[in-house]
Length: 475
Image 1 (tube, helix red, strand yellow):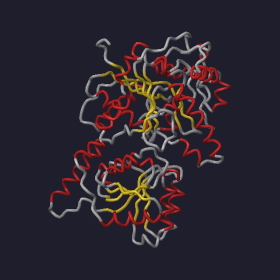
Image 2 (image 1 turned 90 degrees about the horizontal axis):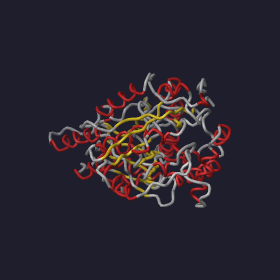
Image 3 (image 1 turned 180 degrees about the horizontal axis):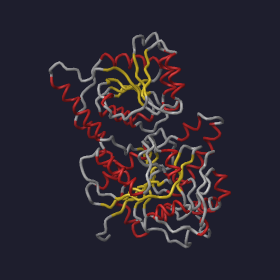
């Protein structure tokens, strides 16, 4: 091995200002992986043309250039960490699929990283990034490809019409693409789809701001001057769609109104089901107030003592980690998604409706335990980065020889009878035309970036897209 620094490229499926997990967590991962200066880190995020930005970014925030969005992302991060990160940011062409509420890549996004820098690729949501991939095979381009499974897609799909059948199909496709494109798979918890030879490890931390809030609460608890650290009761925060825990919470409150008499709960969230959630809350005999969503670090949340989170669709719930970091008691379901949190004394789990009532009632009468220094560290991004480096085993990268490419665009050969290579070749061929891509569910015009995307990103315009306009998928 020479003195060249190892290069880690982190590809993800979303970017700020969309406040979703795959925009925020990979950003922190990039910053903390680059912190000690021992490796080069590049965060690769999607670039959307203006008409697509308007479909997904909140509060009418839009950008006229990638450099403008990069400045926004870096400023947001700098306001939340205590050091100056040294990683670079690159963009790949993408479009927003309205029907899937997801950003999908356009063209071969592995080309963003030059071949000479292709050491390690971290694919945040590898199934999402490779469903419609057509280009160089990730395992050939990079010496090591690590997939991090963020999302419990199957749980969401099962709640749709004909959900169980759809989930079986998606489960097979996910397994197919992850196997052919990833050397190693990290699942944040056992709540995700299982993958062969995968590792379960929570490699996420919390925004340092929440640990600062928690530290001030500890100081208040220790002051001994009679001031209460927590003056409010119970709350829940989350995107206001039924599948994000609201269905479970409203049912638990409805079924136990007599046992929970006097309980007051504040709900914070915005989303497609806001009106329905408000209507259901009004039907309860309990006092349930509903407010628009806001940042969990907002001072309005600092004084709540109890965070109720009955959601079972999360993989590792970010808001649960944030509530624990702020020193609160968390009442949550005994579910694989909460396994990591059980090590914290303020995490109280329940198995059934009766257990929810008992845990909630007790939490409102007791004070949270003070987090130890070790517990605070375990929630941090420093600890999350240590866990990632341990399970990723990046030292093996230079011992791994990249595969030999026998084709300009495809990293394997049909003459090679190894099942995985044949499987990868089939995926390459199947995703090679617009007609077959649409059959698989790809957004129109995603085989190659259109003229507008190429111009904005400074890419050469493919001959096939000369003069083409960008179709917005409104299906």
